Amino acid sequence: MTPTLDDLQPMLLTERKTIPREPGWHFEIKYDGYRMLAMTGKPRLKSKNGADATAWFPELVRALATLPAGYILDGEVCVLDDIGRSDFARLLARARRRGWYKGADPVAYCVFDLLVGKGKDLRGQPLERRKLALRRLLPEVREGMLYIDSVEDGAWLYGHALALGLEGVVGKRAGSLYQDGERSRDWIKIKRPGAVPPKRFDRSS
Image 1 (cartoon, rainbow, N blue to C red):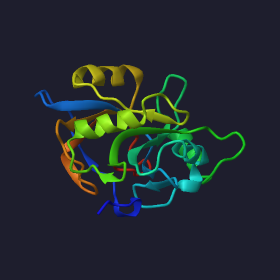
Image 2: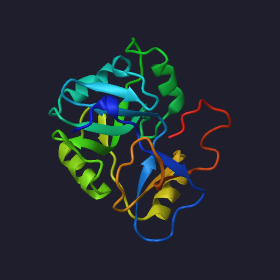
Image 3: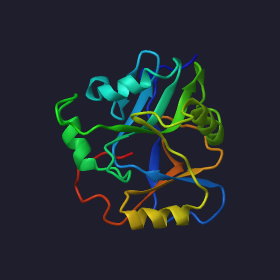
Image 4: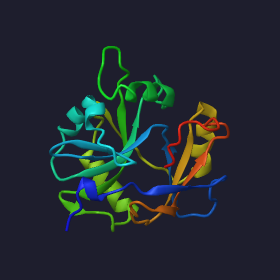
């Protein structure tokens, strides 16, 4: 049976201090935002904690409505600055209002995984197949949506994260399956030192 949005929870990451040196990993930029699952067709957004966030970000509902029905995506909702860095303080100010308002910062849905595609459960497919299906769904830049690609050189990407002041890097083991609701060693996060101040709003992901 194909899972619905209500059935699913995000796969969680294990924190590490250093980039893996062994082969067999894919690396992505770690965005500093709200983790969200989203469905197409009748668009809905669900937070990591299970809250219905559909009304919070109407511009994302419009973007999801341009996609075909039968897909469930995983990603991070962010406010991005003029060079594409996520700004959590601006996102928090926006999200507290639980909707659009005059002068609100627009958000982007930074999408990195696909759980359901064309009505089929993809969680048991290797990471690379899910990413390929997601790339086909989002072949071009869409307003409000950003496909997050990966690279194999984690040290190179982490160096850029340090230089640009990004939150850090996410590593995903090649061939890994999607373990929803689980904290897995197949998905790791390596944060830039000082990226998240102590006791800031808890958003473990």
